Length: 247
Image (cartoon, rainbow, N blue to C red; front, side, top):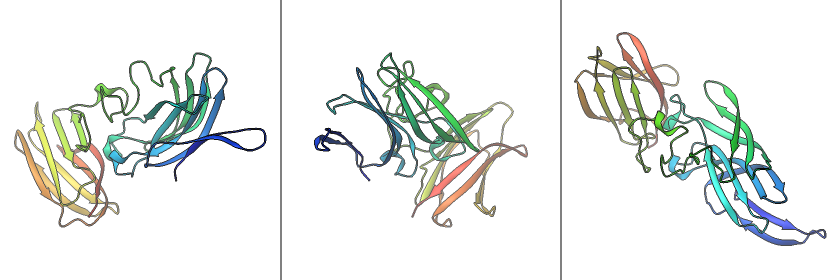
């Protein structure tokens, strides 16, 4: 479904129509017209960079002539979900007198949470302008919460720096192989990566006991689907998340 913006006169005639310039899956569910500013639209979009599998909040601003001012995409950090990002939707937009917009919606964490954003006239939160911000491309706000960020997709995956463990699992989604990069420090000298099916069946158990390493794991024994992983140290789960296999 491709969304568009149009101006219609009092007789129902279309004066102009502008299609949103993207082939990505999308939904527009909210709009707000403001005389001196333009038209704001909100909803959610499934970016190509995430293989069209994750929806993120989407806010657009157009002039009264239908010219695009900005296209902003927002979500929040959540290690439980794929790519380390929450699913997010914008459900309402209200223009403000300073040329900005207030957006409301929901994000998916362990449970669903309400979400409130105040953007300035450029569609930004301070110096951060959403997932396509070139200073931290496809990373959530604030950028510096992510260690060893991938500057340009498609080098996506799960990238964490935990107490005593630097851990990266990619690509995610994966096809025929997974790459695990890690570095142990402090009192941590061994961890295990344990992969389960969504039904709780143990699928893989990999010992990570070198000070640092980069290993390649075959996924030939894993069917297409969603899996859960735990990173275990000293009988305690220090991280967990989801892994997607697509064949």
